[in-house]
Each structure stands twice: as C-alpha cells, then as structure tokens.
Length: 187
Image (cartoon, rainbow, N blue to C red; front, side, top):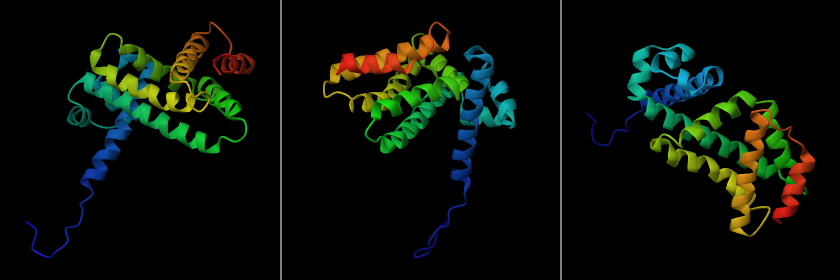
C-alpha cells in the first residue's frame, strides 16, 4: 500500500523479468542455430539458458509464443544494428551495406541462419507472419536510402533476401561486385 506523498521504489522484478525473457530469447536462437526450429522446446531452451523449465513456461506459455517473441526480438536487434550502421554510412553507403551482408554471412552465419529459419517458418505458422514482416522493415528503410522509388526499395530487399538465402545454402558465394551491380540496376 502506498502512502500519500511517498514515492514508491521499484523492486526490480520487472527489470529482472525483462532480462530473463531476453536470456530465453537468446537461448532460443542458440537452439535454432544448433538444432533448427524442430529442436526448440521449452526444455531445450531452459537447458540452453541454464534456467528451470518453469521459467520458460512462465514467460512463454506456448512454443508459438516463444517463436514469435524470438523472431520479434531478432527483428528489433537487427533494426538496432542496422540503425547503428546507417549512422556510420559515409560517402559509400553501398560499401557499408555490402559489409553488413558479408558480416551476416561470415561472422554471424549461425545467427543469420537461425533468423532465416524463423522467418521462413512464417509461411507455415500464421502467428509468425507479423513478426516476419517486422523483420523486413529495417532493411526496407535502408533500401530507401538507395532509391526514392518505394517499389525499387522493395525489390532490393527481395533481392538481398535471395542473395542471403542462396549464400546460406551454399548455392552462391557472396560477391561485392554482384551487390554493386544489383544496386546499379535498381537505381
């Protein structure tokens, strides 16, 4: 009970709850990196995070809820990373975007693969579709810096998706020259 005029101090439970949710989402992506979406269970995520099974089911009642939250969190994390890179875009934004794509394919390949697996799961699970659309938004915003035509920006995102997917499955090597040629066609 709060006494009039007193200030109530936060007890930290909400912040600890947010931190635990984030730990569980990171653990979910780690499970997907290692075992694919088929390997995701409350038990597997709890083991990966080093927490009790009850903790995962408390924060995420169903697997769909967990997967939607993981994809949404990954989209927000990607947006933050892209925003940071956009602020660093100098005279050569195409080079910076090419470096980002290369970074996704080389240095964080497993994470990128996990995110794409969740993204593609939206084709079968309607609950993931809104989160999948949100995952495209940060890339679309950056694409708009290369063209004033919204249709061309959308095509650039689709082409980047194709390049990333093909590189992830080993069907093609990522080549910066191809990337620059793609931008030239879409301008």
